[in-house]
Amino acid sequence: MQPLAPLSLRRTLLGIAHKSKASHIGTCLSCIEILSAVFQSVDISKIASQEADRDRIILSKGHAAAALYTTLHHCGLISEAEFNTYYSAGSLLSGHSNHFHPMVEHSTGALGHGLSAGVGMAMGLKARKLKSRVFVILGDGELNEGSNYEAFMLAGHLKLDNLCVLIDNNKLSGIGLTDSFCSLEPLADKLEAFNFHTIRQDGHQLQQLFDNIQTTAFANKPVAIICDTVKGKGVPFMEAQNAWHYRPLNDESYAKALAELY
Amino acid sequence: MRGVFFKLLEKQMAEQPNTFFLCADMGLGLIESMQEKYPERTYNVGIAEANMASIAAGLCNTGFRPYCYTISNFLIERAFEQIRNDICLHDYPVVLVGTSTGFDNGILGPTHHVIDEIGCIKGLPGIEIISPVAVSAIPLIMEYLNTSDRPCYVRIGKGDFDPTVPLTKMNQFVLAPPNASTLVITHGTQFENCYKALAGQGNVALYAMNHIHPLSTTDLLPLFQKYSTVVVVEDQLKSSGLYNSLCQWLVEQQLTGVRLLPRCVPVEYSHEVGHKDYFEDKYGLSTQKLADFFQSLQ
Image 1 (cartoon, chains in turn green, red):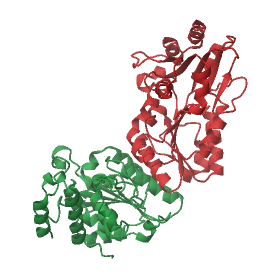
Image 2: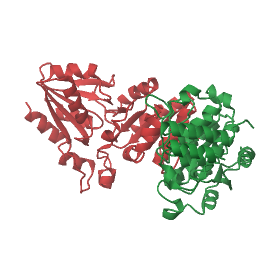
Image 3: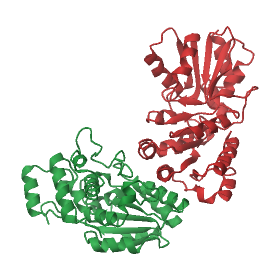
Image 4: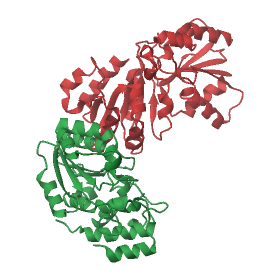
């Protein structure tokens, strides 16, 4: 495994979140291990040179773009200077992931688009007989968007075993508990019914995530890994606190976050 | 027109291995041959238009040029955000092929009246819109699509009309009497009614537009400099289609002294049902109503 240590990623993420005064910190913190595991599972050099047979990574929950940019930066795919332009005028690094930056595969932010685009990529790679994988990272709140189920249905039918969906199940949506207004459960059963090889795990167990990504490749079914996560993970006063979906870091909360970060 | 389009598309599937065909459970009698010959590049995604649009974007990401096919209004209006974000924002060269236009499906009710989808999509940066007027235009359109690297919407109405002299250009004069002061501009299957309405009138010009968006000032400026009255005939809401585009274009060109008249569908959804001829008569788009209207202008 390459060194994309979650603690280091979170420290970097908090830095640009503070500098930019951007929101969506909680949702960025919950998917750090997922991004780390996915990027450690692919050939970064092929992404850097945009090879036709590169693995595709789509952050469908595009509001966690800062976490994606942080991971790309740690992989050497976004320079320090450019990384520091995040969320500022003239930058390509917008608050939702933006494909006008060449290292970002697909623009997202309107939820419920990434999985369908990923299914198209998976179909295209298969038609070209390329042994590459497509990783799509979804949010649990995003699963309220009906378009996902059109995509799940077709991916399962086509047995797209080059498709790996990772669901950041942090259980909090924009303004409340996901399960309190439109429950997703029993999520694993639903995904199994769509003919997905479904795994449920602690989404902060990096090694287990990495192993599951490795062992499920090209096994005659698409894969869904439900990652049970904590919104705001790593910063105790943010954990499971939905105020940090929108609240930006000020100097005081940034200092406290760094002091408590684990 | 659809039959010719699909025949040429199948030829293109053979000649250009980056062509990929998707449909949303539509195309009975048109797609079977492609499914049989090119199963790895032909797929029915089911009744899931939004999914189809995003899948097409994903296919472009892997180097394909997809054609997406279903009924025009579902193709555009159901999948609007996917077309905006996944296709146009990424500048992916997806060809959206819609079947049925205007009141082709009028008897099925207002959910199937294809009268507002041009306005829905024409504001998206990069999109091109093609509205075939006749059978002989289809090869020209396929040739054009082969050279274009833009996202494109092709709305194919039901009909197999062709003028006496086949078309040779995407946009061209079909009738150009030397002393005419009135010009009719039309697109799509309304071309047939206009052509028949003008037969024997002898003093009104007719300009057929297959490519209706974006507008070409090079093509249009000489028309508006030559004719004092220009009538736009289309099976589209007055607020949505070519007339609406030309209103903006005229203002931007600061052209004065030209009378631009709409012969379009009023801005309303019909509560009634009826076949195409019923609505064409109701909205003054039938051959007879158009002939009377053109006569009244002289």
